[in-house]
Length: 174
Picture 1 (cartoon, rainbow, N blue to C red):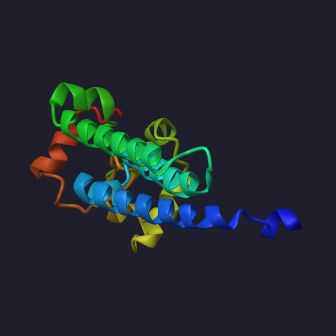
Picture 2 (cartoon, one colour):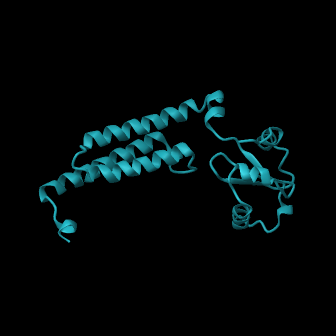
Picture 3 (cartoon, helix red, strand yellow):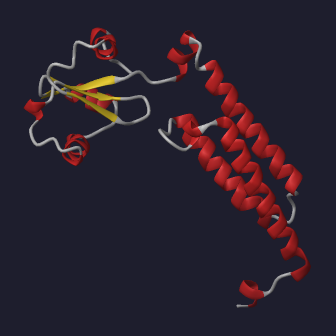
């Protein structure tokens, strides 16, 4: 029981100071990196968010790790995230690093091979469609599994747009 409540009281101030400073570094860094880190989580965004949380949560309580070491770690991590977001704008790099959209449903028919490739089940697909107000697959022209893990639902008549035809004319493999 003493391990729960016994502390070196003089160290607690430093723990609190490191926590507050790292929180500030994380907030400033995430503001600089941009909103994508927290919204529409890609694999890279997710890894960054989890790592930031781990650093901010761990460093203040680690007596062997200084605030400066934590801040440098956070800064390097956020700089790498920013660099990756910039190089992903280069088309060949983006094709190498990012998943492409995959058509899961076409004209109301589920592509079970595409479901397997994306590691989704029919139940996963049904759950998301129901949550979006879809009661019948035949009311849908396309369901596209987006690179960020979201599903886009295209209703009949919308499939002729350039954003959709680029995916449907491509094989949609991701």
